[in-house]
Length: 458
Image (cartoon, rainbow, N blue to C red; front, side, top):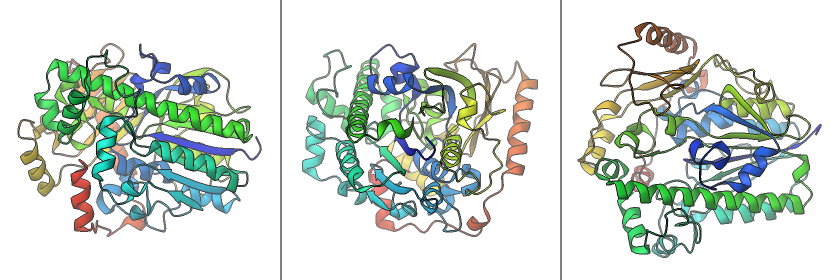
């Protein structure tokens, strides 16, 4: 393992508590569970933001959202080094397979990859009627099958060592894997017509969350589990492809998510700005398999964040000093597996721009956007969590006593809230934007913006 291959698998919108290896009572992730048994599982892993764009910048640069400012300019400046560039400069071959349009050339994120693949309908941000219909029927998927087969075939063209990022989007709403996975966890109660109806309603997730019945939420939860199980199946295929080519034992594998997903908790659905900063959304799975570098079957309660993956892979690849410096007090996951974590975790997102808020309110008339319009930050430390900056007041939760975040203790424990507030204020003072982002503002093609909004973003 002096020069191991490095494989980072990101499952978009995958919440940790739906993985069977994280204690879920349904067998959603048997293939991922097997990887966890061979490596380390991190119980307290947190995303730095609540949606994809800032998280893909963080995972490829190691910078926090406040430092790379992805939500403001949406294109990675050339002066900010990336993990793939650093590894390529050290002799690694690099490959990207992306099922999400944010992880691509349009946002400057293919720089440093020797080869990259994105399904055509993802790149064009279109929904061909045949593909959309077949996906509803469970005959096709969101591109995960093509990502898997392309990568396995491409292994024959890569010399070791290599670094690959595979970004699956099949757990992203409208939660439709391929049969027989799609309705496997629905208890036989969801017909095809019912599934199609729910998928159509998922075009406006906030409206769905505000109007969903108990049956709606139960069926949506089952569809979500099926989509996760299908992605787990693809990861099993990917592993078998690596084993067949003799790569598996010499490959460090990290499996994670960019963020989680709200599935009706507190009347919220999906992710991003109108989904709060609650546990299902910002607590993510994180599993690392590294033979000889990590103990098998370790379950760590150390506090870690997504950027720790970036810096750990850079260190394993011998390029630990090549990334841009960050104000975040990160840790190496090899040390965190033995108990040495961060002093706190911090998640942040920008507020709602006025023009996007107006459009979202028109499309989701039953949903109250009031608590979600301002910038929001969450800090987690010693089992406590403060959500700071919400329009209708801050929220304080004891995660050990109240993991579902039902009781806001902001009035009863002002001293704890003040301590956590000071962490956020200190962070905002120390974490300054990277110099390369100064003066940059988003220049979004109107057609690109229209298509993104048609896919449910912004």
